[in-house]
Amino acid sequence: MNILQALFFPPEQPGGVSSMVPYIQERFIKLGWQMELFSLPKRVRGKGQEEVLFETFDYTEYRGNKIVDKYIQTYRDYVWWTKMRIKKPYDIIHAHHPIAALVMKQLFPDTPLAVTIHSSYERELILNGKIKEGGPEHRFLMSIYGELEAKADQLLTVSESFRSYIGAHVKQPERIKVIPNGFDEKRFKPISHDNAVTQLITVCRLVPAKGLDILLHACAELKRQGHPFVLHIIGDGPIREELEALAVKLDLYDDIIFYGYMLHPEEFMPFFDVFVLPSRAEAFGSVFAEAALCWLALVGTNVGGIAEQIDDGVNGLLVPPEDPAALAAALEKVVTDPTYRYNLARAGWDKAKKVYSLQRVISQLKKVYVQMKPE
Image (tube, rainbow, N blue to C red; front, side, top):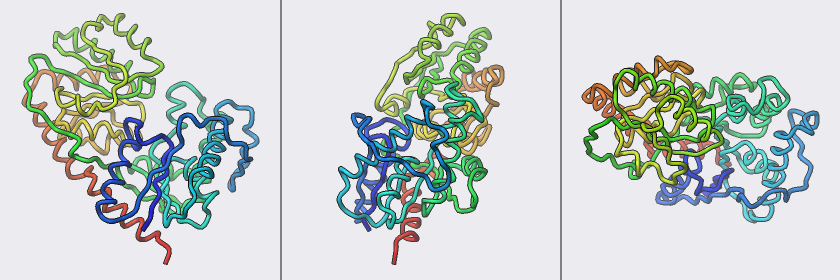
């Protein structure tokens, strides 16, 4: 069977699906399957000219809106690039982004199409203050779910909570299958260490949706209580200067290290003690599973896929979003009790190895592909 994995971001893009799919490809090739990757290079912008038509709604009522116009132009660019580059048929196409999925079905209507919806672009934009809930951009992006349902032969997503979210916007939510992300355990190597001061780490894009302002306020409370720590922030983004200013205001600047962007943070994580990320929303939260495989204690918010990964008090700690006091209390537990922290980390590693192994993903995807393959 010859399968095309259609990405949006190039495979070298760090984090999430773009870094996971090449490992899926490697495993399938070892099993004797044919599998290729395809994505839109960053240099391809403003090339496509074809008109875009959707089956389930008329997008032209949203024309003139900056975000919608950019989305449509990206769709055109993906069409242009796909026509330029793909010259042979595939048995199945598995897309990992709505634009990739809809373009592939447009250009190869007879090829069975699976699409994994990995995240909610509209929720991210709302939480980051880019669009308003119920506004034209939001309505346009929500309409895409119905279009995907009409075009895809199999809808997939990465968590039960995100399936529920998508299910409210499609006609047949029971068609959606859940395959949580999987990770090649060979990438993650726990390292025995004993830090004199508890080392906290977070890895994310520096945007409002990740809740790092809440984390800084929680850390300020932790410091007021006299508990020493160092917080390492790996990642970059539009609110970095704002976060640095907040750290100064909260008298935290000497307790925090801002690293900026890092290509392979999993090589760095095993030297720390606690992974913390108080996201305001998260479809899955791959970085939690990655941190667990590095044998870090987990502290996260009770939202989306994070709450499915963490069993509160067993393999990590969950707190409500937007609650610095609750987050500070959770951090106090893991900062002041190394044995408790170790036990959480060990349980997190055990669950991640069992539930989020790449082998489990391969097995589940094989079943999906076999069921989809035309006779």
